[in-house]
Each structure stands twice: as structure tokens, then as C-alpha cells.
Image 1 (cartoon, helix red, strand yellow):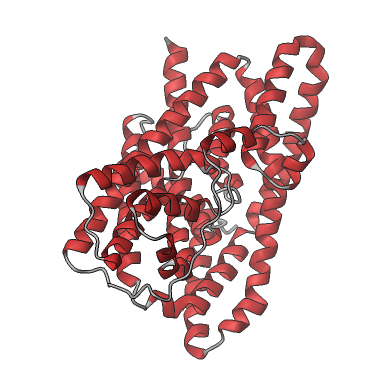
Image 2 (cartoon, rainbow, N blue to C red):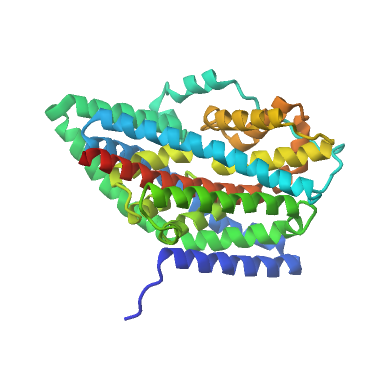
Length: 406
């Protein structure tokens, strides 16, 4: 009997095949073919993922809260998760600035003419308005719009209320457990289709944006990806080793399926089912991963923070501006706070970048220079964000286990 290939290997093969087919279509001038006949299959797969994300997050979080049996433990996990993400985001900003300045000082960044650059930033109403919007006015609207922060709040309220009701809520407990078992089976089926989605999306991206990859922004992309890789290796795998007692090789091997999937789909939320499977295989507590991963998919933006810093230094060089130490500190602070402040907002990456540029006096319209290749940046930053979510779930699980053992 032949041994079935593991999911990470299947996704890796699909990724490579997608690149090969994409390059062939690009050089043959068949980019429109991939957009018309390959991408739709990827869209169908991503639609299926989006279809199950809300029930996965809702029922897995409520089930996780009920399994913890104590709202104090839920609060403890929540605080550790937010602190972990805030610290790693600040580190990501520093790494992004260091790599960007190395490239700038080595004159590797191109200086582009921004006279034709056009970009209109979406409005950001401020942190307090975002905080208010976290709390839903209509539960069904939160579900239909897939507002993940609101879904998380709903899960917290229902989970806490079921715990508080005690024995009278036994039927609700059973319903949640039963629904979650069904959702897990559905999730397994959808995940099994992931190689198809990865292949079709990768072929489409390479076939339609091959020229951009080979264009003037190649070195800016290289700078961002080197920073992504550095952060993954020296922050996430080291924290998993130090706090989670998992070797870097084992960590990356275990997280590979989610990393490759996120790289192709550019959606942390859509990757949640795969991330959950990877985290639990790495030893993360099922209840804790059910809580940490949805929260991380919403507020963890380390990859976006690196992208912002690289983009800011690059755009500053186009303006002819040399960032001072105080301006760089301002970039780190703004980007770190914005990662929480813009959580759950559509197009959060661009809103965050606009906020950083405004803070140091660079015209927001300059974003138009890089917006065309934003998806290429997004592939790497989403993959990094998902890796961070998995690392956090492993570390928090370990911390909570040590706390319980005392």
C-alpha cells in the first residue's frame, strides 16, 4: 500500500507546479487564460474556506472557553496573546527598518518618479471608533460580513455566559460540542482540496504579474522578503524553541502547510483551518489554539509591520528624505499601535502604511508607486503573520501548562 503524501508536501508540489505553469503562460502570453480559467477554481476554494471560517471561529472558541472551565484562564490566555503579538510587532518594525536602511545606504533601492502615482487612502476613524465597532449591534450581520473581531467577541460572551449558567446550560454545551464535531469534519474535507487552490492561484499570480517581479521593484521586494525570513527564523522559531521547547526544524516543518497556504491565498482568516491543524500537531493545546489563532488572524500583523517599514524607507528615498532616529522611532510606535487600531478593517495594510507616511510627512499618494505589486508583498507578509499565530499558540500553551503544574 502506497503511503499518502502529507499535506505540506502536496501543497509544496502544487506551489512549484503553479510557478512552472505560471511562467510558461507568462512567456507564452497566456496571462488572460489563467485569469479566466485557472483563477476561478482558486476562487471557489477560497470561497469554501471563507464559508467555514465563521463557524470554525465561533464554535472552536466557545468550545475552547468551555473546556478551560474558568474565565480567569481565558483572560490569562488573552493577555499573554496580546502582549506576545505587541512585542513581536515592535521587533518586526525594527527588523524592517534595519534591512531597509541597509538596502538604501547600499543604493539598492530605485528612485522612482512619483508624479504619476495616485492613491487615495481609505478613511481611518481612530482607535476609539475601532474599539466601539468591535462590539456588534447585530449578531447575524457580524456573521454575514465575516467581521472576525465581532465574531470573537460574540464567542467570548456566549462562552462566558454558558460557563456562568452552570448545569442549566448543559444542553447548550452539548449543542456546541456537536456542532463543532460536524464543522471539524467539513474543515477536513475543505483542507484536502487545498493543493488545487494553491496550484491555480500561484499559476495565475506568476502568469499575470511576472513582469512586475522582474521590474524595478524587485530589490524592494527582495528587501522585504529577507526581513520576513529573518523575523521568522530569529523571532518565531527561537521563541518556539525557548518557550515552547520545539526545535526550529520541527517548528517550520510543522507550520509549513499553513505558511505555504497563506503565501498563496494572502488571507490569514482563510488559512485558519490549516493553521489550527498545524498548531495542534506541534503540541499546542486544542482549547488555547482555538482562542489564540482567530485572535492572531485578526490582530497579529508582524509581516505588515515589516512591509510598512521597508515601504516607508523606500518611499522616503523617492522623496529625497533621510529618516532621522526620532522619525524611525515614530515609525515603530505608529506601526505597532496601528496593528491593533486597524484590526478587522478591510485593506488594513494600506491604511496602516498611510498612517505611518502621514506621521513622518511623506505624501500618502506615493503609495501608488507600490500598490500595483502589493499582492507580491502581501503573500510574504501573510505567510509571516500565520507563522506568528502558530508560534504564539505553542508558546502560550506551554506557559499555561507550566502555570497549571505549579
